[in-house]
Amino acid sequence: MGTTVFERRLPAPVAVAASLRDTELGVFWLDDVSRTEHPTLTGHVTADLVIVGGGYTGLWTAVRAKERDPERRVVLLEASRIAWAASGRNGGFCEASLTHGHENGLTRWPEEIDRLEELGLENLDAIEQTIARYDMKADFERTGQLAVAVEPHQVEWYREEPGFLDQEAVQAEVHSPTFLAGAWEREGCALVHPAKLGMELARVAAELGVEIYEHSLVKRVEGDGSGPITLVTANGRVTADAVALGTNVFPSLLKRNRLMTVPVYDYVLMTEPLSTEQLASIGWSNRQGLADSANQFHYYRLTADNRVLFGGYDAIYHYGGKVRPEYEDRMESHRKLASHFFTTFPQLEGLRFTHRWAGAIDSSSRFCAFFGTARRGRVAYATGFTGLGVGAARFAADVMLDKLSGEVTERTELRMVREKPIPFPPEPAASIGVNLVRAAMNQADHNEGKRNLFLKTLDAVGMGFDS
Image (cartoon, rainbow, N blue to C red):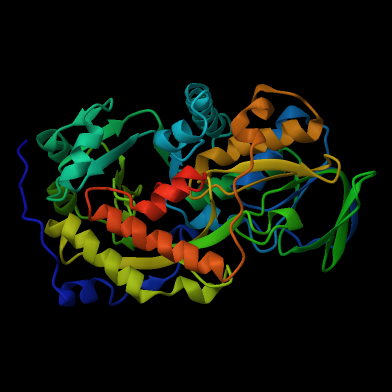
């Protein structure tokens, strides 16, 4: 089947405005699920393991803990509702990479990268098997991911990659005037409905015997680790032998981790369902996840009902590192995304966006999760996923459970697991630094990918930012 080649162009501002006219400020995924309500913690509860956080990290830890030891009493505390934050509002790319891509892992842990990539694929396989075993309705599709070159200098980056597609071949997969080449990695990525995955993990956890409490914000941690640890909420307490923290982008309950991550806001659009003719006009019959190759990159995918999710590019840090609902409403970013969408798919001009939203990403200076323990080994944590936590959260759960058990395993002995990232500086240096990085990365995107002295210096000290 032949493809129609379109000239790359900017859409008219009036077309962008029309596409956003009736858009709801809200998360499509969260509108598209039914919920099971869980009680709020009251009184004093004892447990073998208490988990803080009802996103993927906490939920996978709960499921894996009960799979390892069905008799263990496990309690999970969620400050709001299950999967309402990053786990319910991400793009739904469930990637095998544990290191935020091959290059980041190769730079930081060259002697481990081959095994880390094997472990990542094993982890993704295990997610797929778990979804099948418990009949989880999460719209899981093992489509792989197609990375595309959208500037001439990017074409050479893919020429030696497995799955390389030249311009004709990439256009045969997805018809866009912006695609100059690409590489289709067929095994390392699946697509999921993120909120459904969260709800289904909670269902499975509850069926395995996990006690889940919502609207139960942990205010403080009591105990030095010489005995059981107590977590205190507004209306109750949980005392447990072990604690797993999966608090993601929110302020850590451990002072040592307060400067280890910063919240960076990511913006997303969701279209109305494409008609048969509209879908045919862009091809995409293999339904791969898509991402372009810029530092400020876009990611996009089809949903089960053939909507297009289109997100990324802007990554906004707010002074003070706060996570606030008002930061989600940023029309400047959503207009920019809509304009880029119609540059990518001019044949879809006239399509409307039904939802726009944003969410905060727990960004660490090494661009992937880090791990550790506190309170004499009774408290374990995993955080800093930097946007790739959908798949890596299950691996993180096993790392935390290994550490809490005192086991020495292949996972706990990895240098990637043992090392910590460089912390971010306090304000005002954090805000200045993050915004300087954004400007430098944008400059690199428009200068054949060449990184300036500032970015090269960050690379040299281990804080190199590479999307």
